[in-house]
Length: 249
Image (cartoon, rainbow, N blue to C red; front, side):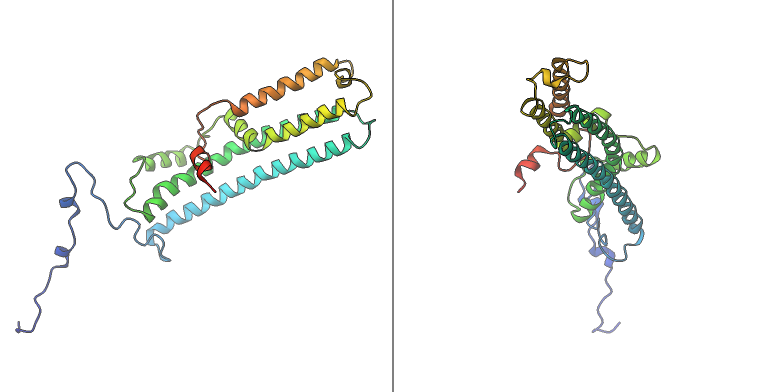
């Protein structure tokens, strides 16, 4: 070897040893976590990207189905109220029929929301434990067993929330305001737009107006209790946190 030649260097010696830097019993941080995560050629990670894209598509599809049910309910309410107030001769109980139809839409949408939550929960798992960690490798995992839980969910899919919680969520977001509009319109129809005084004007056939008014009031109170009672939410909505909604612009 001539005097001008540089001595060979061992590149492996230049890389820090994770085992040497890690304390006893702790998992050493991997500085290469997320390397190439956002590159065009992602190698083996492309399978995870396709999985995430598929879950996003399924979640979006069920989100659209929820919106369609809500649109049907709004259109029905608009048609019912237009017909009920178009003439004093039109019976008021058509608004109560509209109530029953909107309740049916609520039940359908609650079932759809339970299915929608399955796909959204998977998307949130992937966002929290794959993409967030890939973008910021120094972030600590909140759930070290997320892989096992996600694998179990793919192996045996399960519904994460109850029917009552799904109904409560849809009531809070959409249907309780719609019921409020319907009840206010019905009350206006049997008072200001009736030839007989209330509660006689609220009668439906042989059913006295007092009984009809009591049923409407009780059902509205039940909806209010389901909507607003304190509970532990199991749905994995990133916008359910009260602090997030209060601090948001």
